[in-house]
Image (tube, rainbow over all chains, first blue to last red; front, side, top):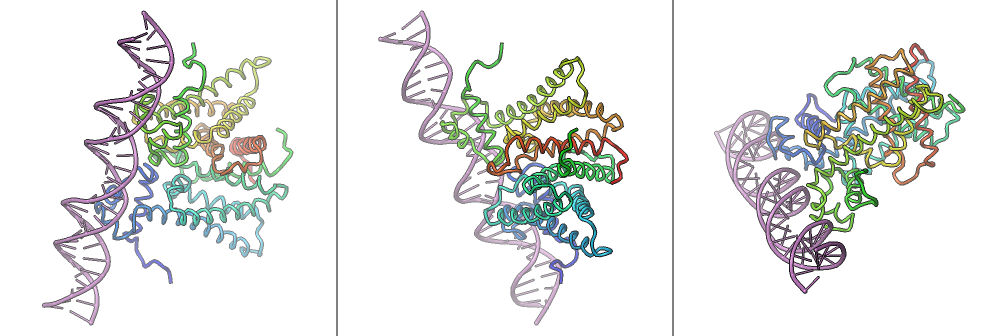
Length: 207
Length: 207
DNA sequence: CCTTCAGGTTAACGAGCGCTAACCTCCCTG
DNA sequence: CAGGGAGGTTAGCGCTCGTTAACCTGAAGG
């Protein structure tokens, strides 16, 4: 039933290494020979698995966006049928934040690619990615406006984008695993995201 | 005494257009012919003004980092001798945030380059940029820990980087000037930044 | 009026890179 | 045991792109 068979296949190896290299040196900055070398084969052997370099980037970016959106949908559904039948929108928002942080911490190369190399896609793929991204944003906006009903929609959308910027800052935090521990970092990011939302959601706060 | 004479010279035209193009399509994604065409001359005429394409990027990135650092130093000094002789650290923090937002809103292409193409520099330039960046971060960390003395230094540094991510999200906000007005956006970003800092600065906040 | 020089121009070279062609070699199946 | 396809290999083509070379030109200065 699942589209994948069993073990981490060659394709996935390639995708993983390509993601890392693209994030490190940029899409144009890495050659197919390097990607091949990273998985033990050399150069054009990649073309047995992908139609071209562009196809790798496309599959990565679509995969990222789809994964984020799917995760958010799942979390929304789970919250709707969690315990008593209706967990508050606050819980959903926390769940969204948690999911995004997990992604940002576990797949840092992907999160880097996500907003860096999108323009290198051909039109069809780029539109697909953007549509998935927009759906993801809309889920956040909807939940956010449930938590803070006074928040206007444009402001909510801007706030969501800004919090994405905050959460996606993980690549800049520790160049070489100097993070003070994954759980600590996750908690810090989570509190900051909630604080940022609260600051725009609760209007009329002077100082 | 100033290193520049008077009017926006050709060099500056080139730098401005190069910044825009690099931000749009990436350093490797734009050719020298395009940069030349953007300022009315064609192709290798650029080499009368710059040693090469790398030199343009280097000058841009060093200029950005230096400008941010210089601005922060000035704001810190101004606050120290502002009115009564000692404006609170909160005012300095607000001033830092305001300055960074101005930069992020006025020079979006540069802010994009800032954390996107740094790895394409040769070692000497990259070290210079990183040193300037670190000094800038340290100024923020110092002020932040004055405002929130309970905040440990690693957490403060992470928080600063994360807020940079938040403030630097401006390129994702409105693709084509769909922002709800510059002042409104600036205010929103400012409140979110303060809210994010407050959330980590004031410990022991349950929910 | 001749020189000089800043600031252009076009032609062309050389390197790098994506991709294809042609070939090889297991392993699996009938 | 034939054979065929999956998954490699190396050689090489063609194009792009950064950079250089050689040449041109108009304006300032003695």
